[in-house]
Length: 259
Image 1: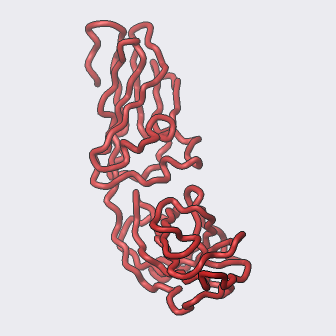
Image 2 (image 1 turned 90 degrees about the vertical axis):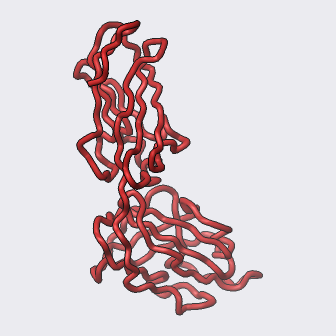
């Protein structure tokens, strides 16, 4: 029995339905692979439906192989991370971010409705063989600024100086237990803040993008402050060695420069 590959977020594709699709007013669904690529180092699938609506209560799973080696299947449920039109009702696409890493050129094969349980308008376009995917341009996260605001609260600016964007999973609810930024005061960790909590607008996601974390940590005496972005190392980066910055901070004029 094949295992399941987790998928980030509340995402879905009708790939292997457990119930029969009905041929309602819009006819039968017609599923196909729109694109295979990567984002933030992870494999991304874009699936389309150019037929009729999907039946209510449908469940989905897909079979995948990388360079001819079968991978675990993965289930998907609506809605998708991103897409066009209305995938569930037909004439739309939806994008899925898997946990599979793409670190080198790979031939990806996808089998939609691999167990042949779905009645579709066209059964001949469910399989894509050896779709070649280039490795992603990766993000590179740094602490651009570490300082105090006028109320002596620690403020951290995170910037993406890499050649690729940060993958959307960094903002998913599954990542709420991971540290987008960790803050230490005199060697003691005092905060672990996920990206979704301080950068809900995805300011740091694109190349050259940045986001400001305005913390509630007040400095009352001269302290060594250390900020680490992606301290739990869940984001694949071009450089994993430049994620931290430290500074001796004190409230008032004459603040020491960042180390």
